[in-house]
Amino acid sequence: MTAYLNGQYLPLAEARISPLDRGFLFGDGGYEVIPVYSRHPFRIDEHLRRFQTTLDGIRLQNPHGIEAWRAIIRRIIAEADFDDQTIYIQVTRGADTKRDQPFPKGVEPTVFLFAAPLVSPTPAQRASGVAAITTEDIRWGRCDLKSVALLANVLTRQLAVDAGCSETIMLRDGYLTEGSSTNIFCVKDGVILAPAKDHRILPGITYDVVLELAARHGAAHEVRAVSETELRSADELWMTSSTKEVLAITTLDGKPVGHGALAGKPGPVTRQMHAWYVAFRDEVMRYAGA
Ligand code: PDD
Image 1 (cartoon, rainbow, N blue to C red):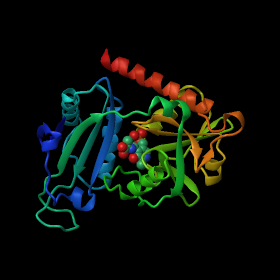
Image 2: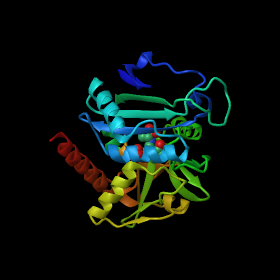
Image 3: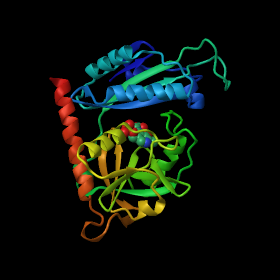
């Protein structure tokens, strides 16, 4: 598998960084994950724009312009052995000769990319939805930045794994923030509810696609604070991310999501949104391949 490290294309297993890299020592860097379908990156401009926002937010100069990024990504995609991929991009503040917190002077950032096979939800997960648990959001105050410092997300996600669930949904001060690696949407009385994009959540690229699709198809939606009570009494819940796309959450803290005959099953709004998403994605990919 080909990786890119600081100007070189090389097998991933041969890529080496210094133990003094600030990404390793401090989690001092940013990253992106871009889905690729049939060797076409989806929403690449939006991902690169969010990457710029992350780098600006952590005061790390972007080592490449858009065209240079595109060229590197194109080559990584072309050299992969598989058609559907996720491209991982990471830039850290580089490796100094000492361990010291302030920004080092004259140190080049470390730039790392690699392609992995796209791991999509299984047909069984698509059909039945997945289980999630909730926990308090213990992360820092800039969850809008896609920082590589993901210890809180790692600990939070492990809670789900320990409970035999797929995702952990976080609450801060009694309000929904997001999942450990996903954005979360609720449906109540036919209205899609999404927490606003502020410093408490990652501005998901898939989140934006979903809200665009809701607007395009005239689906009722509100972007506003979603309380814990609303989360727990939702008719439907789903998660979004570049790899999960739109995936129903049908169990929350061991209880079925929803009411009546639909309790514990993917609901109609979720299924409709997933269908809209797939149709839109395929339309964009057809155009990209034309
Ligand atoms: N995760 N929220 C968090 C905390 C995330 O880490 C992610 C993405 C999302 C969804 O964002 P998007 O729709 O742009 O993928 C929301 C990526 C996939 C990851 O860390 O692997």
